[in-house]
Length: 281
Ligand SMILES: [Fe+2]
Image (tube, rainbow, N blue to C red; front, side, top):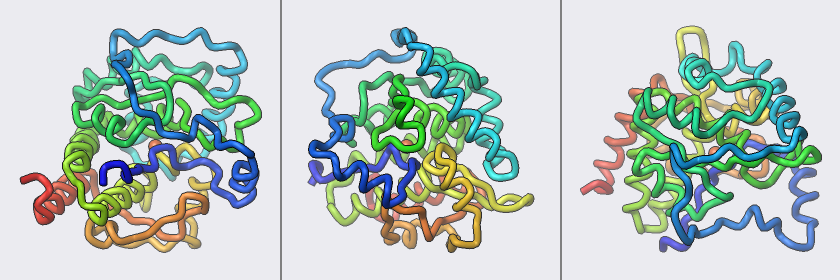
């Protein structure tokens, strides 16, 4: 049923047991972790205002950016690094969603919608189905630098947005959202959720220079960046059917990952799989 749909859209933080235990011991679940249903429109593109961030928010961005950026050379794929250059993200201060929206619009026709927090999956994918990436604009608190259970704009901007500048990836992303919103069978929904997890959040790509990362959950997490390309991970060739059956555990480093050969392959094989499954009839 649609109510059971749950896409892990803010993957990639510290999934260690101790971090989770600390979170799970809290008496009340952090309200930021409860997916919300939107009850009205949110600002999009030119309507997005830049928040009046306190200085410590920019410091948090600066710290997270510097920590991740130094891990990227030789690990992040060229398409992601090119996306970073296109978006011109500042290392010093939290970027403007409006500026990013204009740059994405010029590159691939995608725009940004500013959302208030973790969204209900259908709301989240409803934006993506019309080529809008739903992004938060707040950043974790200073004491949450190492671990935050909730989505924030570091994950959304640094993790996700550079890849959306790639036309094949952007087309796949939109096609995925359109497909997911049509599927109602619980088993098939799980297959799509796994597909999202092992591509958008935890995807690897084979290149002539070696294996590289494109998944946002890896690229926004220091531990995952190092772990994902280590010998501790079994990398499986990308086939949608195999990927759709692979279970995952959000609270631990990933023992199995999948490598595509190109973003054109990702788009084409996803669409071909959806066709074989009869999802887009
Ligand atoms: Fe995400």
